[in-house]
Image (cartoon, rainbow, N blue to C red):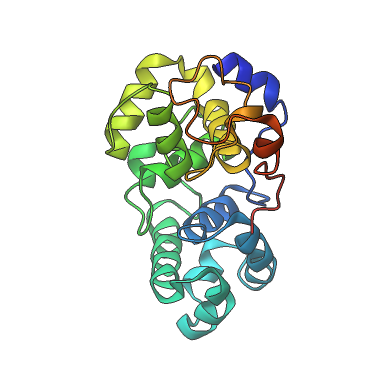
Length: 218
């Protein structure tokens, strides 16, 4: 199934826009409970105003909240951004840490966010267990676990580390484009012959094709 996903999505990548590890960390925190498209529309002004951890740590909270308001939950996210920026400044010399154990000590940063940064900014293998990832691995029968940490551990046992980051992208891309939560486009899915959940959505090609999404995912 991973080989088919590799052939289906040769260009799979992180759909958040970023220029460095700090920008990716901030964008990933902002992406909670919203879309990558909305984050990508929000971050240019944010990074123009506060391009470094030092500058963001010193930001006026109300100004920061106003800049990130479109992403939702802006007060909580602003607190996280202020906290993680100050921690990077004070504890890590202004540099985003490069290990999972250190990243998850930052305010607002859990394993999912840490693995996004590790895999896409630093080239360190990591599994990004977001809602798409968790839903698809259960639908595919790869695991029955629902706790994200246990899902991560189970899938890590199935694939070599070199596959983890790109596998995450492929599953997220497939979940956004074909394997939707309520009505997956089963009739045009390249995994149909291998998927134990085939038939959850329309199996007729014409009906299934209408469900395919190409983005942007607003």
